[in-house]
Every structure is written in C-alpha cells, then in structure tokens.
Length: 160
Image 1 (cartoon, rainbow, N blue to C red):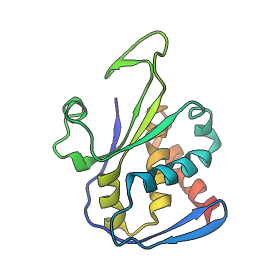
Image 2 (image 1 turned 60 degrees about the horizontal axis):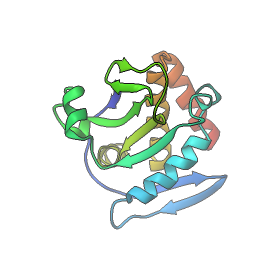
Image 3 (image 1 turned 30 degrees about the vertical axis):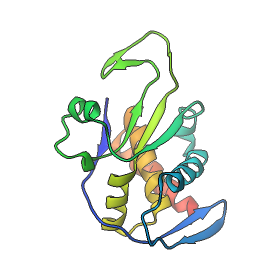
Image 4 (image 1 turned 45 degrees about the vertical axis):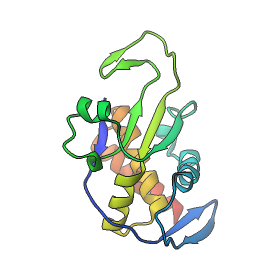
C-alpha cells in the first residue's frame, strides 16, 4: 500500500476549470467534502488515457485524514503527510491480496492535507486534486516518475 506524502498548511481561494467553463471559488471557509467530491468527479472524467482504463470502476471518496490503522500501516509521523491512497478491491491488508476482488477499487482523497498543500502552493485547487489523483494512480500502477510527470503536465496543459 503506497500513498502520496507531502506536508503543508493554511487556507485560501480557488479557480476551477470545469467542462471548459471557469468557475471562481472564493472561500470564506475551507471547501467542504462535497466541494471536493464534485472536483474529484470532474477530475476522474478527465484522467489521462493511460490511467482512464484503470479508473472505470474506481470509487473516489473524500475523508478528512487517514485513520489510525492507515497511519500505522504506512508509518506516518503526521496525518498531514498523506494526500491520497489507492485501495484495491482485492486487498485484504497491505501487500496481501485475494485472487478476485470482493470490493470496488477506491481512491481516498484526504481533504485536510490537500487543503494545506493548496494554501502553501497557491495552485488552483481543481488542478491540484487532479494532480494528486494522477500521481497516486500512476504510482499504484507502476508508472515511472517521468511518465507520471508527463501525464500530469500534459493533463494540466489540456485544462488551460
């Protein structure tokens, strides 16, 4: 079980590009889990072709932080270190899989760590969520760092 790990902190405002329409989001409070789910659904529809084949039956959920079991399994020192985590429907526990899937594959986005990274970087939140998804899926499906960077850059450029 792998996950994207980064540290950061803060809150701010955002511009999201959805279906060729630009929506300006100015938040007086942090974007909610519902806001994240909407942005994640749009990002999932626009994943690069290389990842789209792996995301047909993928469920994306938003949680505030990793749970204690995940923190222990990944030896996290701080729950803000983990931005996203791919969980296979075949996985019984980290590194142990069944022969066939009993559950859906799930990509968990961790809202608070992503918000911190967003405020620290000043990047567009929708673009950041897409990048986190591309990186986590790319790492899980053994794409190289160069391939992941190329997919994220190509995908980002296509959103402008």
